[in-house]
Amino acid sequence: MTPGVHQVTGWGLVSLSAFIAIYYSIWVIILPFVDQDQPIHTFFLPRIYAIAGPLVAGVIALTLIGAFVLYVTVSPKKVKKS
Amino acid sequence: MAVSKLFQWLICLTSFLAVWLSYVLGLVQTKFSEEMNEIIIALPIYLLILFACVLLGMIGHRVATFNDCELASKELKEHIDAARQDLAKKGYKFASDWKS
Image (cartoon, rainbow over all chains, first blue to last red):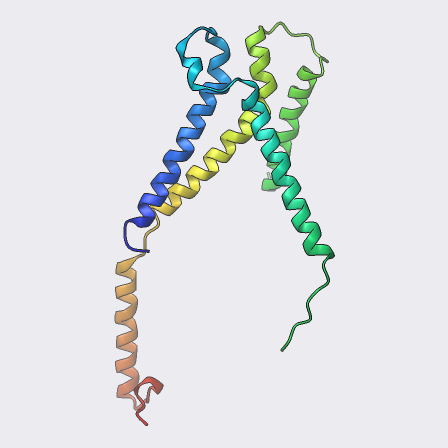
């Protein structure tokens, strides 16, 4: 890596995680206390997706990981040539 | 107290889940408002997402502040040079100096 690229990557990751944390906090913790007719609600999907989205993503991820582990475990071992 | 990191996390997790489940399953009588109820229902997933964000931020911070120790590298090279000169003085022949 040329100098500076990993700084940009690192601080990019930090700001991405900070943005996700703040956005999700507002979505889940603050929005239930804001009235439905306030304009801030146009920036967020309906609240059910805040719970269903991560849940579905987690189920899919765990399924893929499980399928991969099963595949690696069941498939016959290759004989090493040496 | 010699409790391993795994058990510290497991104790935190189970005590949180005990309180949360007892609320969600209605084992305790509470008088929270409708908004508070919605937040409490989503709390485990919210904490999970927040945990993931903290870990991602830690990785990013470590990547950003990763230093490559140029001073130490220079010092080490000086030590190697000094050792080579010392060995050469004593008649040691280096493989890298061989000419066929």
